Image (cartoon, rainbow, N blue to C red; front, top):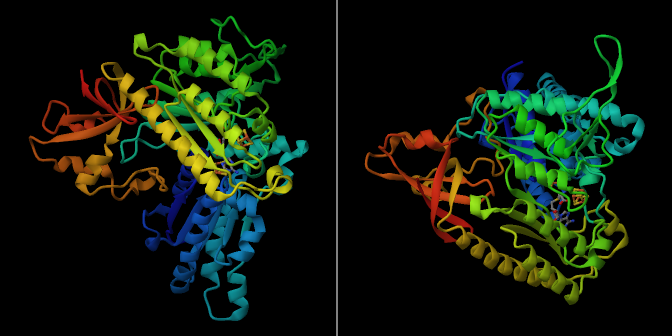
Length: 552
Ligand code: SAH
Ligand code: SF4
Ligand code: F3S
C-alpha cells in the first residue's frame, strides 16, 4: 500500500489529547506519516468532543470544509473519532455523507483496521462506474453503542481498551522538547451528572491495573519524561481490586498492592488486595523516582480521603495542585445536577485540603482550580449568589466557567427545560469571570518574593509572537513525534537567536502557576537546553496569573 499522510486534529479534554497521541503512535508504527496541514493529507481525522454544543459546532464546520476538499480529491478519507462519533452515532453519518469513518473513544484500538479498509476500498474502486462509486463510499464504523454498560461485556471491553494504552509507542522527546505525558488510570464515568454526556460517550468506569500504569510510567521515564499527569474523570475514585493468584509454590494468595504505610487514615473499606488511589500515587512516587512531577485530574469532591492528602503531603514529587470542580454553590442546583454532595461538604473538603497541603512557608502553597456551570435550568439569582459565595471562598487559582448547554441523551435534556435565557447566562458568566480574574490576580501577587522550582516548558507566547512561530503545540494539534513529522518545531528557531539577545521562556510551578523568565542567548546554558529541565526561580512581579521570575 502506498504511504498515506494523516492530518489529525484534536478537540476537547486531556483524555482526547492522550487518545490522539496513542492513535498517532499506532498509525505511525504502521507506516502512516503525519502533516500539520490538512491540505496535504490523504486522511483527515478529527478527534471530537461533545461536552457542549459549541465543541460540536467546530467539528461541523470542519466537516463542511471537507465536503469541498473531497470534491477536488475524491480519494480523501475523512474520519470522526471520539465522543461526538459515539454520541451522534449514525445520525452524523446521515447528515454528513463526507464522513467515511466513525470511531468511538472506546473503540480506538480498531482504528487502524477501519482506516485500512477505508483506504483499500477507495483505491481499489477508483472509477466512474456508479456501482463502484457506491461501494467506494462504504462506511467504516466502530461504536460502542448500548453495549457499554452491560456487565457481561465490561471485562471484555476493559481488555480490548487496555490494548490501546498498552500499545503506547513510547517515542523519544518530541521536536517541541516536551517532557510531560498523560497516563490514563480510569476510563469512563459512572456518576451521571444530569447535564453531562461523558458517561454516555466514554462508557462505564473501568480502572486500569496498577502494574500496567506503573510499567507505562517507567517506560515514559526511560525516554526522558519527567512530568506525568494521571487522567480520570473522577481520578480520586481510582480503585483496583486484585484477583487471587497462585504463586510459584502453588499457594493461593491475594495479590497485594503496596499500601501507603505512613497513612493513619487507610481507607477502611480497602482490603489487602485493593489498590486505592492513595496506594497508586505512593507506588508511582516510590517506584519511578525519575518522575519529578506527578499530577492528576480531575478530582471529584466526594470520597477524597485523608489518605490521599497525606500521600500528597509526604511525597515531595507529587504536585500540590488539585482541580476539583464544584459546578455551583447552591445545594438545590447540586441536587438537580445529581452531584452527590452538598456545598457544606465541598467547603469542608476545601478546608481540609488547605489544612493538609497549603505550606507557603516551604515554598509550596496549595493551588486549587475549579469548573462552574452557570444557567443550569431553574437557576435563580439567589442560586447564582450562592455560587458567587462559593467562588469567593474557594480562592481557585483559575476556574473554567461554562454556560449550561443542553446535551441530547442526558437526563437534564430529557426532563428539565433549558429555561434560562442566553442573555442571563452571559451576564452570570461574565460576573463570575470578573470575580475570578481578581482572585487570580491576588493569588499571583502573593507569590512575589517566593522561590519555586519551575519546570521549563518552552518559549513564552511573547517570544513565539516575536519570532513568528506562534504555533502552540497541543492546541487543537497533536505534537506528533512519530517519524519526526513535526514539521515546524517552534524551538528550532532558537538556534538562530543573535548573540547578546535574551530569550523569554515559560514554565510551571508544582502548583501549576505559569512563570516567565529571560535567559541570555549566549550564556553557559543555551536557551534550548533549559527546555524540559527544572530550574529555581524567584518571583519578581505578577500580573493576573502571569508570574515573572528570575533564575537563582
Ligand atoms: N469529570 C469532570 C468534568 C468533565 S467535563 C468532573 O466531574 O468534574 C468538564 C466540565 O465541563 C465539567 O466540569 C462541567 O463544568 C462542564 N460541562 C459538562 N457538561 C456541560 C454542559 N452540558 N454544559 C455546560 N458545561 C458542561
Ligand atoms: Fe460528567 Fe459528572 Fe462524570 Fe464529571 S463526574 S464526567 S461531570 S458525569
Ligand atoms: Fe469532551 Fe469527551 Fe472529553 S465529551 S470533554 S472529549 S470525555
